[in-house]
Image 1 (cartoon, one colour):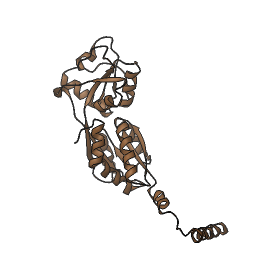
Image 2 (cartoon, rainbow, N blue to C red):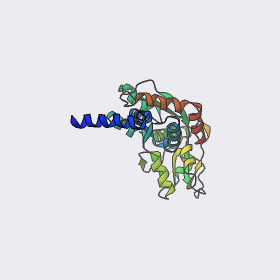
Image 3 (tube, helix red, strand yellow):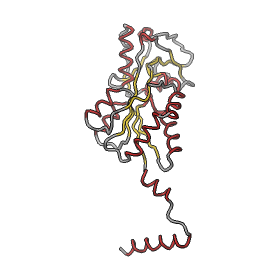
Image 4 (cartoon, rainbow, N blue to C red):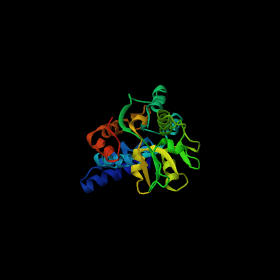
Length: 255
């Protein structure tokens, strides 16, 4: 008790001596805290840019990201991980949280993406389409079918009338890109935006419209968000003109 009284008296003395009240910015920082955004792996580069712009527009708010495959993030959130915002690479994984009552408001679609074949720079195996991925001797990696990119790839193979090649099934698109970039795999299927983000070490082979699938990205504030006001502000920023411009710069399409 004596320590609390002494601290209060010292605060009064400081204000009287300096003529200034405690900084309102400090109070704002304390109230805003750190906004925890859980986002699909394919959003890593663009959301880091969005986070920087959001922080500049909202002094006192710090954005912390957790990037992983959408199913992994859903599991973490359902197990009680501290998340304020969730951005998925598909509507199916977001729907799991909606059905669990974990979402504060109806999710909103904020971007679209397209699957694309990823190969090493120079395309040494001259891959031109999905059928080429079934050639003997090629090492092909895909995301697992519970991961949005893996499911989209499966849909694309089905549209093309091609049986997906055997090979490892990864937890997220970053793992697929990494294996191709390091020469551990000859090709894979990720998103156009993943290829664009790592174009110094890989390149993409586009899919014809008839074989491709449109990936839709939903975002929502979570019911148990520790900072609900900041969470809604982040959603609004992502859907604003400045947010859409950043998404477009990284290759994402408007919904």
